[in-house]
Image (cartoon, rainbow, N blue to C red):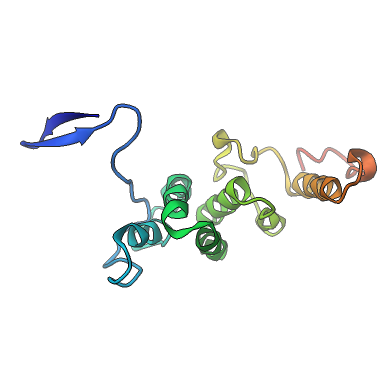
Amino acid sequence: MFLTRAGGVFRAVRDIWRTNIQVYSGKHAGFPLSPDRPLPERIASLLLTPGDELNPSSFGVGLLHGSYFAAVHLGRWRVANMLKALLSNLHQAIRMGACEELTLHFRGQDECWDTLDGGDGSDLRSRYGVIPPMVGRKGRRYIKRKRKTLRNGGAWRSVPSPKGNCWMN
């Protein structure tokens, strides 16, 4: 960590990771939680609460950073519930980001893919290794059935594959 001059004042800077928190959730008139809650909890809640003049694509990608910070300060259970609430958001990019976060960080919370339409895959953050855009809904259901079979002690081959090419449907 070192100091650098910016705008006539010295600021602490790290060269490995960010020392500030980017807010992708739009404008907020105030913090979502009451003032008696600790400031980190209020900031964490703000990161996962859509505000005014929101860019849905940026918010969907911002969930990647915001959900980690929120899990530290709010706990995983509260973050999972906030992400599940985002699954009913008006914007598809937000629903996709929330579903990807649930899949990536919360084991067994991938049922959102059963009802969520990935469209052309442009809203997926596939570069983060969650679910590649070329996997269709039929393919995701197939993978989910296989995982369930393995969790229940079954063999990998005990689930029949869907007819046709499940990866491109």
